[in-house]
Length: 177
Figure 1 (cartoon, rainbow, N blue to C red):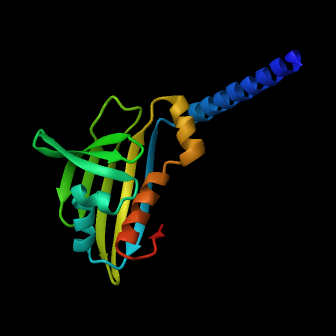
Figure 2: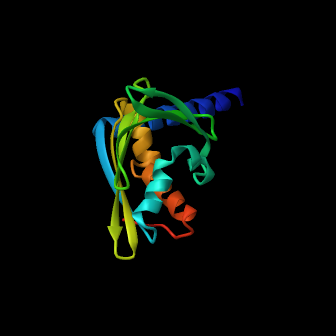
Figure 3: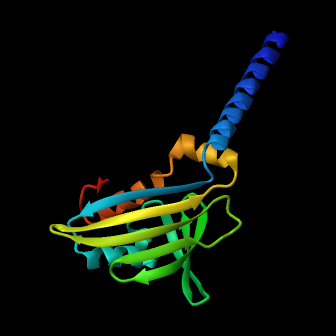
């Protein structure tokens, strides 16, 4: 009986190690840098979309994953804030470019994180409203972490979630391309 238990434990440990090695292999085969673009179609005017994406302090009212947003002191004359998530994680962000109501660029402001990146958000007027195109340019140096992101989340996940939440804020179904 004791011998059987040892084999069961060893088998499960081998499975865990094999799975971790598979994630590492996926990460090693995945480039460090990535670019992802997704576009939300909305019935809102560009000014309305701009107000929602630019007013970071009130985003916790429509982004379900956010607990709160904390304003931080400006960094080199640029707005800095920290998104605090309901799971306890936080992410400092810096507004690196702003051209109302058409373009907003925000950058991850913590070089110690296991990833870095920039979101370029472009709002364009359309016949029946506007579009919000978010382009993420990111880097994930750690191959194991790259494997985890690739297998479990995908690089599009965060943009799609953000645009879906924004559509809900407007009382619309998300139409994302």
